[in-house]
Structure formats: structure tokens, C-alpha cells
Length: 355
Image (cartoon, helix red, strand yellow):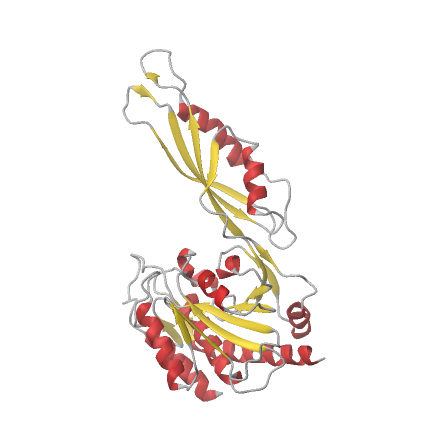
């Protein structure tokens, strides 16, 4: 186990030092596939996604997916260090993607290798996927049709090893409200900006009818507004954009319909893909979390869970508060503890499947 932990740390350093901005993950996909090859593990690749099945894979058994991503956001302007240089100082490994979600990914890979040759009462599938940071269609969504159906997906994201059993979804809505053009010097026209302001006051104060026990209230935020072309013309069109964070109390379609009843604008969702998630409280993994004393919570942040249509939980080493921040880091001990936690979780999950 100690060797796997040291290898995981070395692998994470290699990933940090190989730029992998979303849609540009080709080189980290190569790093990952080369590592699996060196471990004599058969892997498959589609696009920049790499996945592998345990050695004793049996189609008659249920399957558990271990998933995390190897893409990163672009480094922000606040970095004081080279974001692509992996440096350990004071027990912290610095570098872009170290915390989100490199630490989780290499911990899951080490866990997969630990169980690779063991006989389990379920199949184990590892998927290191692309485009998570942009919820792209060439990431986990493109891999799932190539895999068997899943009893459970364990999504590696930095949660301080707490278990996220629910996650908010996202729908971005473009709104168009129409007035009538006129000359600004005369009392004519219908100002689309003023019509939009009426909508936005409603949006600002709106509370959705339903809320979630784990995720609380849904949240709608106006984030962009555009109108007008010159100072002396009353604008006839105003557009605005809404960012809606959706709990498991709603489907995305239900949220859209409720908002349509509140405002004058025509509302068009950009996508209805990023659903909220909530695992059934009777699922074995929840029973196990209760038994092991693993804290459970509802996550406000989006991950690949939104695109996985199977029971899933989100858990991993690192802290979500460090994600996308300047001089991103993860504690080395968090990676080691993450491996121990994943192995312990799957060992106990095996016992549940055998009973």
C-alpha cells in the first residue's frame, strides 16, 4: 500500500506538470494510459477519456464506477507560483489541478490498482475523464454508453472525505423581452429595459415553491443583461441571462416552467443536461456511510454527477474551497488518507454485497 501511495504522489506531480485545460487533455490522457500500461492493466480510450475494468470482470456481477477528471480550468491571474510546476512545501503539493481533482483521481487510481486482481462480489471500473470543468459532451457523458449499467458511481471530488449524497444541478436560461422602438426625446415607444427591470425585480426576490431537505432552496441569479444600440433610441429588445441552481426537489423542466409563469420575457434554456442528483437513502452506500460514521451533506457545486444517470455519491480528499483559487494545493497527507478511505469504503462495500 505504501508503494501505491508514493506512486500516486509521483503520478499527480506528472499530471500537474502536463497542462490539461478542458478540451486539451490529450497529454494527460497519455500520462494516465502509460501509467496503467506500466502496471500491466488493460485500458481503453475514447477521445481524452481513459477507462479500465478489473482483471476478473464478470458481466453477471453488478458494477461500481470510480470516476474523476483530469482536465483543469485555466490558471487565474492571482497565481504567484508557476501553476504547472509541482512543488511540495510544508506538506502541501502545489500546482493547478492538485486539489481539483488530481488528488482524488490518483487516489482512485491507486484504489483501483489495489483491487485490480482481487475477486470481488462486484465489478470495479475506473474512468479518468475529460471536460468535467466545462460539463462538455466529450467527457463522462460520452463514456457511459460504452460501459455496463452501474449499481453505483463514486465520483472523486474534493469533499474533505465527507460524502455528498445530493448535488445541485444547473440550468442557464436566456431571456428575451420585447418592447417598441421610439425616439428618446419624445414620449413614444415601449422601453424593453424597463420591462426587463420589472422581470428582474421579481427574479431578485423570487422564492421557488419547493425546497430540498439536503440542498435547501433553489437559487436563481441574473448574471448578464444587454439592450440598446445608441443613446437616443428607446430599445425594443432587452436580453438577460439567468443562472439557476436546482435542487433535487425539481427537474430542470419544472424549474423552467415555474419561472415562465413569473416573468414577461421569453425564456430559452441553453441545456437541460445538468440535472440535480440525490441518491436513495436506502442504497447500500448510505447504509455503509452511516455505519462508518462518514458525514453526509448536499453539495452546492456541480460535478460529473449531473451527467451520471445511476446512483452516485461524491467523495474525495482535498477541500472544495481551494478549487479554482490562486496557488492551488492539496496536502500530501490528504492523498494518502484518501487512498485509505476509498479502500476501506470498498472493502466494507464488498462485505455488504456478500451478505
